[in-house]
Length: 327
Image 1 (cartoon, rainbow, N blue to C red):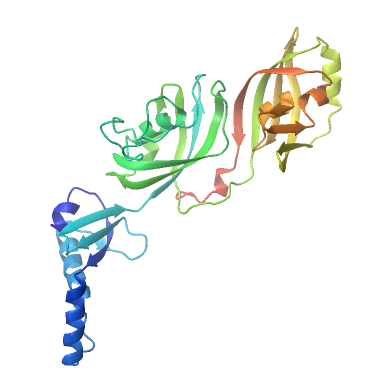
Image 2 (spheres, one colour; image 1 turned 30 degrees about the vertical axis):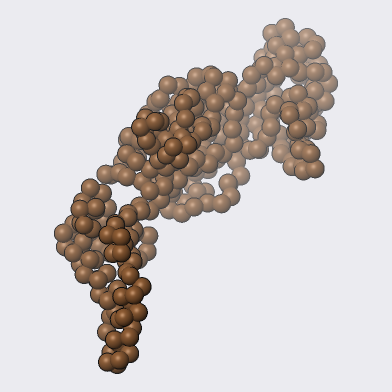
């Protein structure tokens, strides 16, 4: 029963857990007390040892109590075997070279992201997103598993993500794979989304390392005054702190560079370098939803600016700061 359940799953290390009938354990304790049996393994440990030896000999794998590839739970009451693979933690970067793609997706309600007939084994509801594109690429290695993405910021659906790409984390829960040949996925494309980088992580991270973002912004000016615009930006001291207020909360992000790339009539192309977490829409409009910015681009440029579109040119994050398996 146990071997049949494991033969279809590739792994190299495992750990065994056994569930016995409580009455059997109580009966054993009574016998041990009656005949004063000490220093001998109990029936649960003995059965666990026998099953472990059988698995190791038949499948050429090793038992491991620290981070095993798979945990095997044998329920001798119900006659069931359950297997759970250790989650795989990944760090990656994606580029988006086509406009009109939102970042996040909604998980399929039937399978909760594991993959089923209704969602065509994608784990998601209908709708093309960056998340579903990356998941489809990752499915080339992970035949089964639930993907939980953590994003290092976000962009508008109409924004491009260029350069080295936007970083992200993904946890693959209960994964199924033959070999973790992640390097073969780098450069893979899926309808406007490119997987620039993918690496195995040694451990989880709970805080994102500080990093900067280079933006390309197109805006419509209220005045056609190139000379005034250049002078205002030239006089700007950097870093320039911008305070964002969201109801009763506030946070500060710096502008490290703010230049005018070109101007045609009242349409201007700007280049900005900011801290991560910088709300570009609130900065240019003064307010976006609940979030307001001070100073705003309108205050710095001394005229109103209508944001047309913005792209992420690059995300300057040192990957060496992360606990990557190959670093």
